[in-house]
Image (cartoon, rainbow, N blue to C red):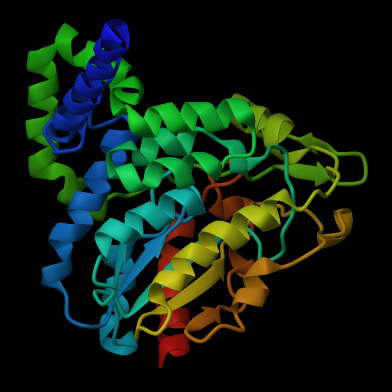
Length: 355
């Protein structure tokens, strides 16, 4: 019994120390600002601080890096639309991360007139990889996970290895933060200086951000043979095309649909019965979108969600006019001109929908 008692006490001590450091906010304030968790936390705090600046007609948008628009330009339309916009999207995230962002950003479920979710398609297509087992989400939302989240978060992964990593990382957060801790201990003064700098300028830098004017004019795609002509000197575009665009249709398994039903479903359930509307928008897909008939899509969970009270779909062709090489900086992301045009269109279309 004595060795067993020692093991139990050691585990209890480890859990208590981990909770003291990582569940009290003590270490969260010391995170590397450019890390996945640090960026997620910065955006969450920025949007929490911004909420009192706006009135009742505040709209928050969430998405990954493809939801590239300027809230400051959208807010130039406020006199006409009646709504103000803020963006809580984080590059590299998905619906699982957006759920945890909104849970802490809007705990009372009454701080926004609408929540706008940017997606790549209303149909469910299993793409080049399975987002359901993407462990990157753990590193974005680590600071948001509560003890009550450990089991359901881990079980949301299908792969056994991913499930184990999610379980131990959400139970003992020090496992997720160990590289960040080592970097802090190696250069503590630099870390503190970076944190102080970002604390002063993050709102101004992000709200006033202007993207590049670079474009991909000259790009041509042969969807019959899955080949492309790339503008000279654009190695990044070539890599994106080869890795993420020019792949032949994958067998449809329904995993993307299941992932969406689970995480969008949980998000929608939070706002069920509240005045807050949840709006899905299909983002500009690329400079030369893949033809719709390349793959037979088995379902459309997002269209199914539209049958729920309080859930709305923006016309999926609202932004088709932006899908041109001169408005994209790479295979997925709008450039400065594209961001500006999307900002105006988004404000106008959401304004019409809500009115």
